[in-house]
Image 1 (cartoon, one colour):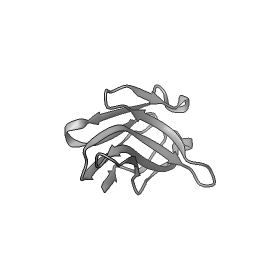
Image 2: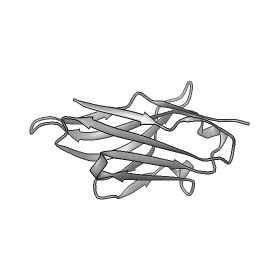
Image 3: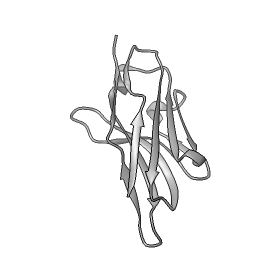
Image 4: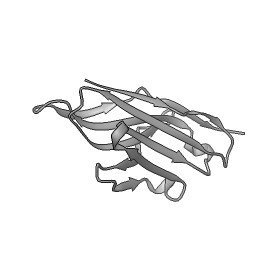
Length: 120
């Protein structure tokens, strides 16, 4: 099993910044893609940013130029640097990891979610 521990959410004013972290632990053979998704009240969960094991990134159009995703493979950790935050960025942010835990098992794992609220 893989455990994901997220941190860094909170309340911030419009235009402010936050940095989310997600550390994976457990019996991990390999980690492939890592990413962040978010879900606002009454809405579906949407992709925010993903990063492959080789460092290639993909960001949602709504966050391009404001958010940056990165990872530290030695620490099995993915980060989301969020700048110029807007009220519409308010949501619960979930970490997602595609990991192999044995020669037969590879699947997605989700974090518990961290609340990000952008409000004055």
